[in-house]
Image (cartoon, rainbow, N blue to C red):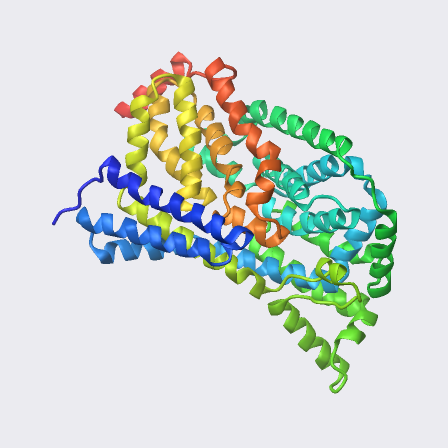
Length: 489
């Protein structure tokens, strides 16, 4: 039996099943939906897609191979996730995160906290080109500061995600910022300059909204609680600027474009070394006393790498604040990523997503509707394939010819891929980016998404620009002639 293209009904069924199951998962399990129920929903939706593929003539061996390949594409992210788990644990033990929390409590004004958090994460992410690294370092500390100030973790996480993805989006060091123009056929720096027209106004609006929230809500700091946390930090950790050196080393490596996995893992190792050198009093309390100090220290650090850091301060809420990390803490996220990639690979292989795009192009008559359709397709790809890179590559491949046919410059497509793909990925709980942010910040995307103002505003502003014809660049006649000549050659 030969393979045949799916009908629109074929393409719709797995998506409808997935939406129903994920909605039921959130309704029945709430914040715990990402700890198993969502994975089951993705498994069941994959099974439905497989049945449709078999009906259309695809052999099981072909579908299975696509699943394995899809999962393999996420292994780079898995290595980073495991390293981040180890880094959080050792940076707790080394005093790096507690020191950031301590100074944050002393310096950040509650009224400006959300806007300052967003701006700080934006600057760091732009400098290093990584939203993930920014969230795992500065973001973790800011969540701790927010808890110390008695501020909303959901709003704080929204500010962190907004800033991290703003900086990531316009940084020439970012993988997605390089990937989008490569797919669309535009120049990197032309792409970045063109993105500024939608990105900077969106970020400015987000900062204004965070400022309004900070000054309009009751964010009066509880100085007794701040003093309590500060005292606990000083009693249990050696608080000084030396503890921040692992952070500066990690940021320097990221700026030098050292790949993310070795950068984060080296940061975790450096945290372990710093703990031994500068947190000796804490180490002495935590290590086993019936073996030598050197051997006990090795065993403790080994344990923290896989199980994370825990401490008993005598205050249960502060124990939660100052504990966390470990590679084992990332295993649920990895499970979610594998399930999502399996589903995405299946629907791509049997042509379900392509069928949607073909149907969309039938209705996209104007430039505004074409760009809107591209953004919607990027978002849907983020939902279905659960991968940020797929949301850039697949729509980019599918729409590139149509943009050229309509005489639209490649920077329009590359900007739209980022406006619709890059920044919507952390809003989806089962997407690799959403799952990662949940694991690192300990706040569900379902809670922070409504406060990730930059990520929400940017696609809307891009659509408004498209329908109003603002900064929509056309190919000049010489470019069109050159493309025709190149095609003939």
